[in-house]
Image 1 (cartoon, rainbow, N blue to C red):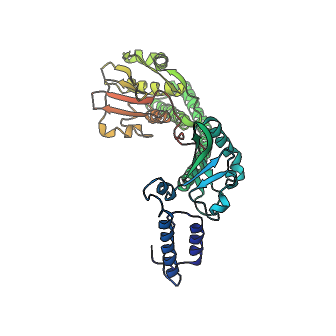
Image 2: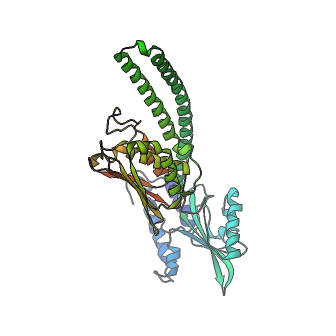
Image 3: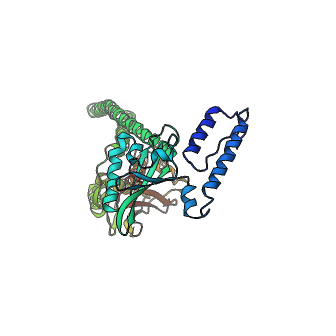
Length: 423
C-alpha cells in the first residue's frame, strides 16, 4: 500500500463498511500518521477473512470465480426477490439484501424501465442488457447490467443479474453527448451567420456587377482599351466573389441542409450530370465513357454535387490541344458491402506531394486567371464523402492525368451509432 499522506479516519470507516458488505479484495491505504498501524491490522484481517471464506471450497473452482469476482453478481426468483449476491454495496450487508425485491436497489426513475427488461427475460428466456445509474451515494455511479434466465428442467425459475462498473465510460459518453449538443448549436448559429453574411455580401456584389455592365454598355464606345480592361476585370472579380460566396454557403450546409438517405442509382445520377454539362463537354470535345454503376443508400442531391464537381474538375484541368478522355467506373466488394467509384482523366495532372492539399479549403495548385473556380470544389467533395461514411483520394502525376477514387458503403450507418445496449 502507498505511503505519503496520513491515513485518515474517513478512509478507515469506508474500509470497515466495505468489509462488512463482503466486498472482495478490499484493502485500506496505509499512509503515514498515527492511524497507519490500524490500517495495517485491518488489511491483515481482510486477508484472513478472505482466506477463511474459501477454506472449505476449491480455491480455483466456481466458488472462487464468483466470490472473488470484482463484478457484482446476484440471482433472483420469479418473484423478483434476491436469493444470492456475491457482495453488496456500501451501507448494505447480506442480511439486509437477501429476500428483498431487486427493485429496492434501483432508483425510482429507472424501476419501470428495468422491470420491462426483467419481465421480458422471465417470459421469453431471452437475455437483456441495459445501463443504469447506481442508487448508492458512494462507489461506482454507473453500471452495465446483463440479465439472463435461470432454468430448471427447461422451466424458467428465476434470473441472474451481472453488473459491471462503467462509470468512467458513462461520464465520457455524457461529456461527448454534451459536446455534440453544443456543436450542433454552434453549427446552427454558424449556418445562420453564413446565410445572413451571404445575403449581405451578395447584394452589393450584384449592384457592382449591374452598374459595371450598365457602364460598359452606355459608355463603351467612348472608352479606350485600357478602360474596357478595367471594367472587364471588375466584372470578372465580382463574378468570382459571388461564386465563392455561393460555394462557401453550399459547403457550410453539407450537414445542416442534408436530405434523408434513400436508394440512389449512380447511373441515373451520372446521366443527369452529363446532361447538365452538355455544353462544356461539347466545347471541350471530351469523350466520356461510363461503366456499369451500382445503387447505394445516399443523399441524392449530394451524390449529384459530388459527381458534378469531379467531372467538372476533369473538364476544366485539361491539357492544351488535347481532347479530354474521361472514364467513370465502379466496382463492389460484396463482403465489405462497399463500392469504389473511380473517375479517371487525361488532364494536366499534379504532383502527388499535393494529394492532401487539393482537398483543403481555398487551396489551389493553379492560377485562378487560367482556371476559374473558388477552390472549394474538392473540399466540398471530401465533406460529402465523409458525411456518407466514405473516403476520397487522388492519384496523379504532372501531364499524365488524374484518378479520383471514392469509397462508399452500400448501406449507410449513422456515424457513432451505438454498438452497445441503450441506457
